[in-house]
Image 1 (cartoon, rainbow, N blue to C red):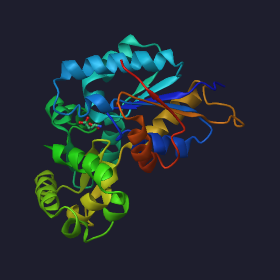
Image 2 (cartoon, protein in one colour):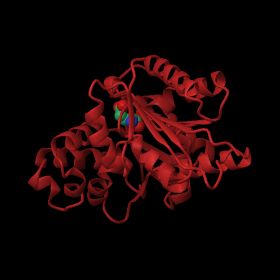
Image 3 (tube, protein in one colour):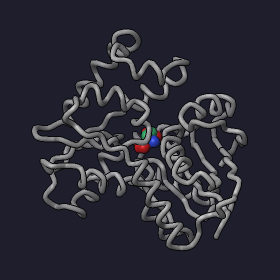
Length: 283
Ligand code: DGL
């Protein structure tokens, strides 16, 4: 048994979709979440720069005494997972391999689309991870930086964003030009025969209803959060590092944002629980 917290990080809010799934799967576990909001987005940055961020944040999380680290950001996983696994002494889990695994299991046509950031697409991480599982699966990866912006701006500017995104008239009522551009990006990822679409960015599950509506009912969407949570559980279980059944979880948040209050308000919507302890951190 080990009551130390699980460390989770992302470039901002997106990783809270993964943190929420981990919280729901392992309700007794404490979590330390780090959102690097001041340097978000990671997507357009060079890989070497993002790798440096991964090194810094893993160092911070180790100082907080975490027993495992989840890189809840596809771009950071693509750039820095292997380096972090080599340099740190706790298990480190990324989100690309769990998403690739779920996609390979899901596809019948063996044609998979991936929506991700420019950094993730350029790294070829999904193509490599899917090929390692089934070299016969064809992958079409498309960069969708617009979606990151849609989520960030939507959460900031529209207090009812999460409700609005679920309504079919969302595009017409709120962001018509964006829904049209979004449709074009999604259609590009849906090459002929694609039956499975990976949400290869942790921001995208927030707009899953919109993506699903545009992709249509015959396309399965893969949100790697569930697979990632399962990997975390299995890793802790095998090491006998799950916390005690009676353990009272503590959720601590750190952000590089100069406005931790905003992080709290927006973060709560995605995490689905209150963000009680928030620290402003300057790395
Ligand atoms: N969270 C990042 C990811 O999953 C997307 C946002 C960013 O570009 O930093 O790739």
